[in-house]
Length: 553
Image (cartoon, rainbow, N blue to C red; front, side, top):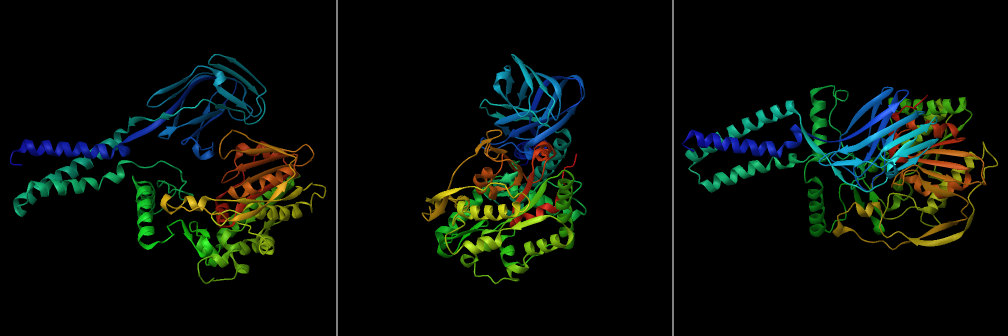
């Protein structure tokens, strides 16, 4: 290290290495959708995409852009590393729209030169395809085009010059200090080159976790939304930024999922412990979910604040008022957490309050005093039937089809108070089914996963309805029709409503099941044509309604 040029050469090499490691900070990976459009009026385009092959289209993975009337070349950037599906929504009531020169650009380019490669859905009055030129006519709501060919497109890389300079300065500072320290380390401590190389490699490895930051919205393994990068709106103090940044980084650094799997594997092998941060095995092989404050909810240790109660009630009252003004009936359905029905198999934890004083009961009492919303909490009906047969899967967070059937009966009992002639699903008998693996099973590392051969009683339905997925994905809008019924249903739901679909679809002429966190304005046409509006939520997730607003016209 005696010659200065050698030191600067080493500093340059280390700087280059650090810049490569932290490339995700100073470079932007994205995919661009480009097309030419012609229209007589402004069009509110929305591009939906799927970052995994089995993902459905959702508002979370979509980008909007308003294009003025006339002829324009449009470029829309998708903030994602890789996509497998995409669709184009030309907004509501677009009239006549001409699309051409459609292509997706990333590491490579996908040119769509044939309009027949799209599926045209939802209120398209007329269309004409001439090679890659597509002419659509729609004077109704929410038409869209789904690209039906299989593909995988990886993002290209663009340099953010500002972040590049900041990262370069940081890397140069760190490498200069490191080299100077190692030079003194060698002289003062009389260390060998092997010691120096080991120390240098150790410090280099500290930067590896930041070499790849996940851009996923949700952790499928943990069944929760990942923390988001701090925004101006979310930061009020300096400590807010540090806490939010730490949560964002802890959720997304390279190798996080692998470290969790290794930890769970070692814990299982050494302690034979069937538990991790998401799920635990309890009495008689029952599995229970731990996230989303599930343990505190079981103990009734936390209640809603006055502000939360007011906000939730205000949101539901908005929907109630809109339904009254439009001659519709609104119902708010809460599916109990599994631990509230089968608490005897749970941890040996004392309850801070009885279930009669839970946060859900608190919300119901508040709604009764400050709202006309008809809330249906399915706790009592499920407790009334649990002595007969199992109503929830032992290895899953959800109720089984028998539990869902009793829930459906309770919902219909309330609906019939407003619509006495609405038909109910006919049950022809019962079968016995197994549920060998559930979502809780999959939250364990593979070595810990065990099949469960418990038998469950399942109703056999006299099916009068037909259902289809609106866009052919795993979590789409599911639309069912039954010509023997009269009323129409719109239900905003979560995964618990999967068990209700076979039953509710028998009771309505048309029933639309929308999986989403909140009511989207794009769904207003479907809401408007329904006679019955239902919001369904699992008990542990009801706090989310404090942050929602009903999308009025």
